[in-house]
Image (cartoon, helix red, strand yellow):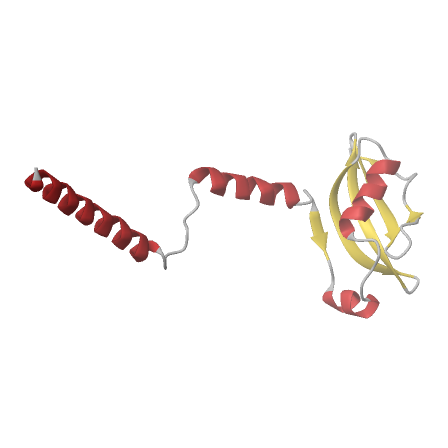
Length: 134
């Protein structure tokens, strides 16, 4: 009986040592995400993408500073005004010494270019001008 107890204790000690050693060895390694975590992270990145091109001239960006209306909000203003429109590009521009977002959208078989004030969100030009493609 003493032999069985001694054998059990020896096996338990070896198992504990291997488990603790493995835990200590991997403690310094960064955790590697599994395939589902990587997939979730990449789909989250796609959801964060606006789905259109954004072009910001660094000089205009520095000159006008922070603007209350960003490119994504300007695109939303245009799609609210033009149901069915799909924004393809938003560009920071200048019109009469004010910062505007030039929003290019496709609607039906035509295109529209709409200027949205980058500070007030007011639509300045282009809502009624949908140009049909040939």
